[in-house]
Length: 275
Image 1 (cartoon, rainbow, N blue to C red):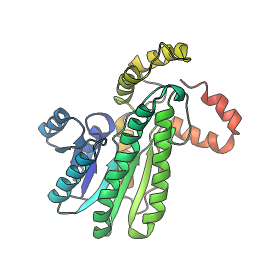
Image 2: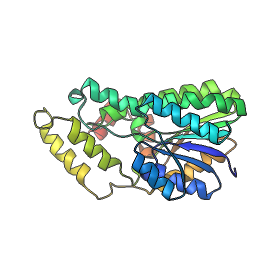
Image 3: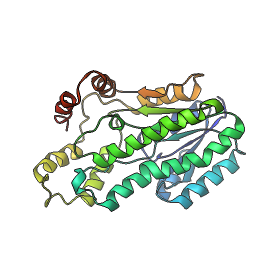
């Protein structure tokens, strides 16, 4: 795997940042991308080959891919679609604009980027597409409707691509992390405050609890570090038979089992108790 190239989105912090640094240590040529120029400069100052890539901007996606392909002479081995954010709020409090923005980043931009790199993987007769999904890509929780829907969509697209690319030595894997130590809650809090009219919502009392949860700096139960994701990412990159799904934390594994064995009504009762 020495010198094989990988493009990673969402490298400003958390999973993307950690995995970019670790893959570089493991001999990969890492193209680490971030939405903000100041984050790109920070990554560059730390020795990473970093570029600006905004998943909400088609031109930004095209320019980043063009530059990456130029630098690696078309030999792009892998894409790790990690960039995403969570938009909290009850479904009825999500405006069309807010819901569209969630999908622009988590689904449409991600798929546009993926579609641009597939032809190069096909030409090279090999490739790995690894999608950072969520436990919320297969079970739904209250006040996370926009994020739930975006990850369900990502999983559906990934399952379809896996079938379509199976004969071309291009493998598609989903990582379903669950709670991982990162800036996810901090970023979700900012979007919650920005886009949800909490005071005038039917769910205003519930939102008070949600606000406290997002503001808390304490880890939720069963939280793991970014290294847990890196471990399965490495397997997805290097195994001759990568898994279709990598379930990382205990909650992800538990809900996979519960969804398989419980009725919808019983599972709903359990999910309603989860903050």
